[in-house]
Amino acid sequence: MFAGLPGIGVGTLFYVLMAVWMPFREMPRVFAGKSSLAQWQLIARQLFYAAGIVATVVFAERLLLWILGQSKVAPFSPAAFLHEELGVRAGDSLLAAPITASLLLLAGVLLFVEVLRVVVKHTARDERQRQPLEDVLDSSTPS
Image (cartoon, rainbow, N blue to C red):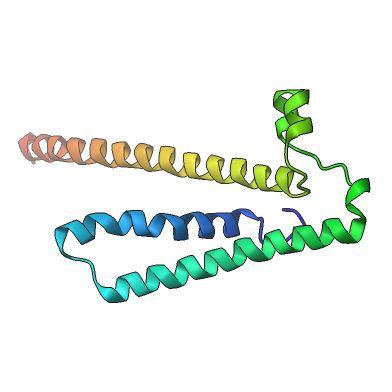
């Protein structure tokens, strides 16, 4: 999507968000007494990887800003779309726009998948409800 900017794509963003979500998802299992040490080790490892990804992206951005000479860089901030003053006060980040685009794309994909899941679920339920009626009609017709 954004060539040359690894670590800010939809896949990486999804991975980091899911790693952060894992402890919250495990909490009901803790309260039910079904959690395990192995599961928490996996969660800790995924959080460690996610933190490494975030730290690497932040480091790469700071290095890029330093190489370009930070005073010459005019970052494109999505906050400028909301209000000009908000755009001026936004942080000096070159990656704000690509990360925002990735977030919006990820939200769109997840929304599409959830809508499709609901449609397929209702279609399958309607099909199951029609099937017994067709069986009754087939058995009542004389052969």
